[in-house]
Length: 86
Image (cartoon, rainbow, N blue to C red):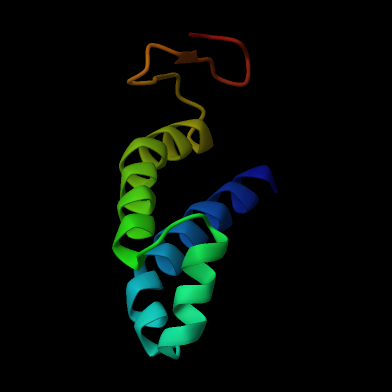
């Protein structure tokens, strides 16, 4: 059951976030800008840069953890597997 949950999480990230730009582009301009501003950004491209940076850094870690592999974070943080292996 845990594996199913992990795979659903990965699928959600890959499918939902991968389509974010096209979904955002369909919103009325005022609504999109309001959402961007609520997140603390002036422009959509600024928020998108943050999302892309997060994606590049986090997805390999998320996938490795879902596969119960140890991961070395680029910020020198070692993330152990569930059983404590590093």
